[in-house]
Length: 449
Image 1: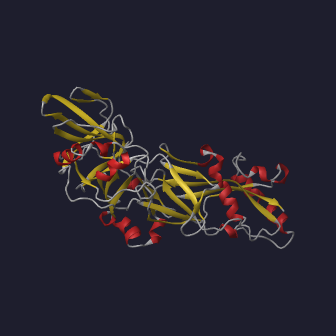
Image 2: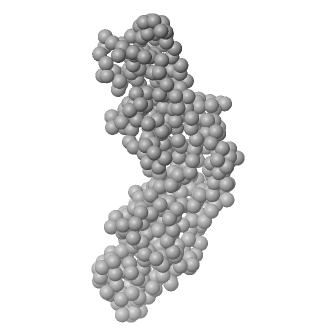
Image 3: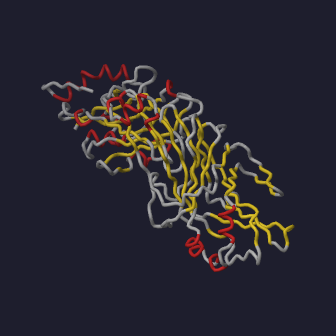
C-alpha cells in the first residue's frame, strides 16, 4: 500500500483527499480491536485494502511427539506430499503386581489390541504392520521427536501382519467379549509371549522392574503403493488398548486365562514418522525438496506429523505510516484469508479442523500473538467448509508491526495437533493463477496525533 502526502497542512490535506474514498469503501465500522484506541470524534474515515504484499513459502517441520494425545499407526502415499509411514515406540506395565502364572503355564496367543480414536485417508487400503522389541530403554524425562529412534531387535513379532482399519465399526465380538469400540488387533509371536510369561514374579512386582526385562515395542507400518490411511490410537485407554496374553496351565488345559499389559500416562511413548517427500508432486518437490521458495507465492503446503509448515511475512508494514507525519493509522480489523487450493483437493484428504498461527521472535523461536489472547471466537483459525477457507484475525499483531513495537519477522503457520494428528492442507498463494487467493484484508482509520 502506498499513502501519499502533501507538505501543506500535512495530515488535514491527506485526510480530506481520502475522505471520498472512505465513503465509497466503507461498509460499516467494525466492532473490533482498535476502535477503543481512539475516541469516536477522532475518526475521519474508514478504509479497506486487500492488496498488502505477502511473501510466503513452505518448509520442513519437526515436532516433539513424547506422550502425545494419540499414537499414530499406518502408511499413506499422497499424490502431493509423497509417502509417510507412522508408528510409535512405547513401554508397557503389568496390570496386576506380583503376577504368578502358575507352575506350568502355556501361552496360547499374544495380541496387541489398539483403540482407534480417529483416522485420515483411505481405510480400505491394506496395511502391513511390524512390531519390534526395544533393546534400549525409553527415558521419561527425554524429549522425543518425530524423527527420534530407539534401538530394537531385528525380529518382527507381528510377522508382517496385514489389516485394514475399521474406524467406523463400533462393535467387535472377540470370544465371549464384546468390544464396543473400533479397534485393531495385531497377533504377536508366541516367542514374545513365552518371554513374558517366563519372567519371575519379582519382575512383575513394580513397573520399573518389569521395564528392565521388557523395555517395550516399536510398532510401525510398511509403505503402501497407493492411498492408505493413518489411524490415531488412544494408547492409554486401558479398557480397549491392551497387550493381551492368553494362556492356560498344563494341568488344566480347559481353563483359558488372560493377563493384560497397559500403557499409562506414567509410561513413555512417542510417535515416529518416516516421510519421503521426493515421491510428491513436481510442484511440491520443487518448493520443498529443491528449495525454490518463490513457488510459495503460488501454492503453500501444510502437513502434520513433523511434516510441513509455512512462513508468512508482510514486508512493507513499517512503511505504511511513513508519509503520514502527524497522523496515525489505527487498524480496526485485519484478517488473513487462507483459501484451499481446489485443484489439489481430494475427498480422501479432508481439510483439518483447526490451524495455528504464531509470530517469529527469532529464526528459531516463536511467540503467541496478542489476538490469540482475545479468545478463539475472535482469533478463529478454523476451517470454514462453506467457503473452503481458513481465516485468522490478526488486528493487534498488525497494529504492532505498523507501530514497530515488535520486529517484523513474520508468522509461522501450521495445522493444530501436529504431534498427534494426521492431516494436510494446500493453500492458494497470493499469486495463485486460479481460484480464490491468499490475502490480508485490512480495515483501518487515519487519525490525528
